[in-house]
Length: 301
Image (cartoon, rainbow, N blue to C red; front, side, top):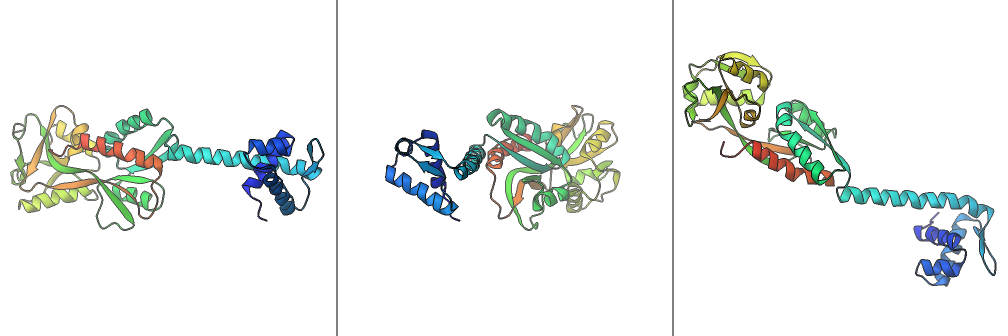
């Protein structure tokens, strides 16, 4: 069966207008061409759908039965086109973003608020999880994108750089480091260090910093969350080496200083599955994410 949309439109126009002449005028086509479309439709259906008289046309029994289905076909098509246009024009849509908890707290609220101001119909769902779970969510389609710091060796993943992050020293305002412009890694040799556990990418970079400075890393405290590390620093129990964006949640009693010799940096990126088209809603969100990541992870830090 090869019924066309044009045939259905011709049939409905005739039933609505009552005559072939008026229907042809409405569709801006010649009457013979309209009649041909209706005949082709009847041939495909194997029944007559219209009884033609000298003054009007009327639906046959089969025509009445087909009429309801034809109206639904066009209504469903119009709805589908409208929904597709809404997605393309970013009036509607849903984005699922996977991001580590602290980065989610720092970046996502202002970015979502800005998105809602520009595109009220777009919705954002946050999956706050560890970096490895972020990659898994993106790879298996549970999230449209992920934000964080990820290994360049991850396969089937596209990377979009958002900002460059640096490791910084976080200490109390009464620390001898508080008034310094920068602190060298070797100066941490005798400090009580609050660090993250070894399953954290940040901890691995801290170990690189200590090894580069040829000093021994002996943590005073090992914790899983950056906010816990900051609380221990605030209590005067040591110093911590954390990413730049931790400043956004650090209490005012804590200062952050650049670490040098060496300066250790990493890219904060957005990841997406390779080979998949980018939803219009996500492309609208990318620019906002880049803006708010850079505001909270300034390059001069």
